[in-house]
Length: 262
Image (cartoon, rainbow, N blue to C red; front, side):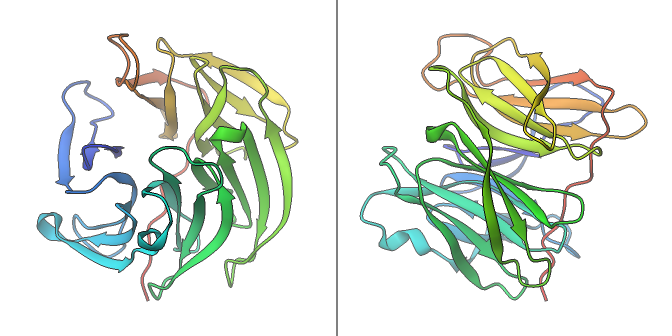
């Protein structure tokens, strides 16, 4: 499952059969991220427009909150995911990349939306370890990935530490994934790379991507694992920009978490 942010499309790829993507939903607002809604058939929770909504059958939006409506600049939601405890997390950013205008939000299982971080320019991630007690979160504009401790009961964040700082002029951390060994995979926008980092922040592996703007990475399967990399066409004349790439890997992924409403 992947999104096309500006067109508001939720899409699905067949991991065993390359070909056209299947459209699952089409929104009238930008769609930053989505996670399956537990116990449903074809419904999701989504970071979209200026907030968080449930995507019901037929693409109908049931808004939980639109916290960015009150922002001083024009905002949209960006990346997000569900954690192992069934909460949903998503970040925001300004359309014009206004520094520090974005935030990170947590959606608890009762549907309550809480701002947990602010002062972010381009929010990407977050991703969580298998236990749900460690979160990695990126501010792409600052080239920075931070690590947090997460209280599994309340979702409260603590002990923010720098995990990776990228300093190259054309390398910015974007979407991420965590493999079964607890190592962090990062799509590096501008560098034509996906990088794998050990839990201590040291670089373990680099994979080249044949276009300049990788935007996120996904690891799928255990018996015959594959890595999928989304890319962006924004500002590029490269015909491969915006393509979805798949490649074999020897690293097993983990199933995506669902949002578990009370």
